[in-house]
Image 1 (cartoon, rainbow, N blue to C red):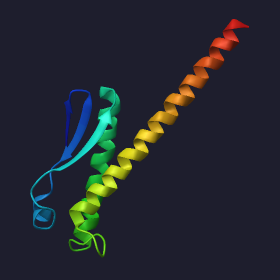
Image 2 (image 1 turned 135 degrees about the vertical axis):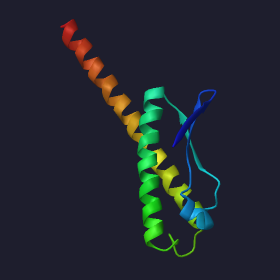
Image 3 (image 1 turned 30 degrees about the horizontal axis):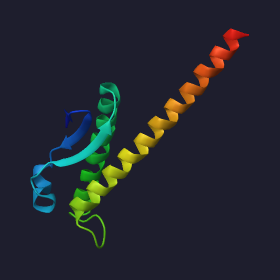
Image 4 (image 1 turned 30 degrees about the vertical axis):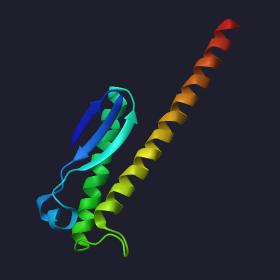
Length: 111
């Protein structure tokens, strides 16, 4: 697993296991994470690495097939990008809840 930043944008990268290179190619899987703090990007990269490893195991168990009509590499990238979107939405919701809590605390202390 590798996490790299270019400017303000983070990118996750994971190496394809050697035994899956004939199916997925040897090129690493790269997923843009977007802007985040270093801690958030590291956390998201660990989650993506776990999901990628699970997908690699599932792909091995199915003999190199993921879906009926899709290229396994494209399917894996689609799944990981969807996970990235879910994590981004959850992070935005967390920030909203923290902001609401901070506002309530300020009101409480003002009273």
